[in-house]
Length: 197
Image (cartoon, rainbow, N blue to C red; front, side, top):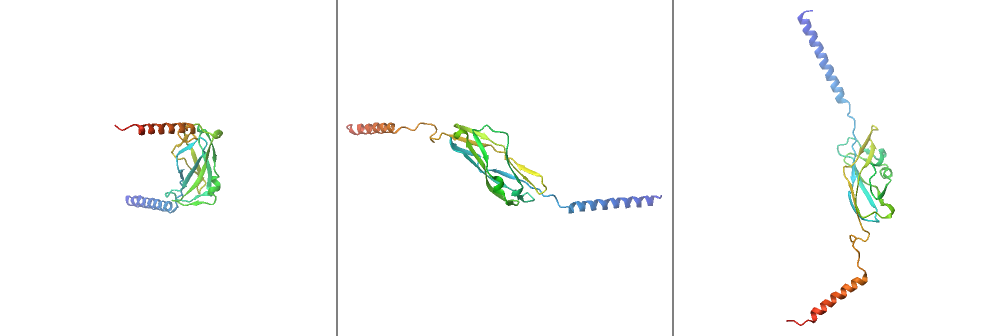
């Protein structure tokens, strides 16, 4: 084989490889990218101040971010889940989350308000104090059947005040109030009765 034939063969092989690479790149570019679902949600408020006998209702908002490339179908929501048990003097009951999202379609950029659930004080009365909790997750399926979930990186805070509503101090009895009023009236009468100098 001469040098000229070798150069021609090399050039033909190289040109063939380049054409094949270009064809493969074109085919890959023409293949539609897989749609991606993102899921975000959070409580309307992470800070709650209640009295000892009051429950805490958690309302929230589920959001399909604008950078998702597919709709979030309510029928694809698997449910809400709670993380490791948190030492709160409350029992928690989830709302009917699946029922709230039945038939809902959230396109990218859309969201929906919903009720997550309610904390009820154990025994009807929570001890006075400050309590913290977290670990709620919502999971859904994307169009390919893959699970997508989101757990807010926030901590729930519940501040429990006494049921009497005055910070734990005792409300004066009516007789005590009358005695204080009489004493104030007596001082006023005495100052008024003194002659001016």
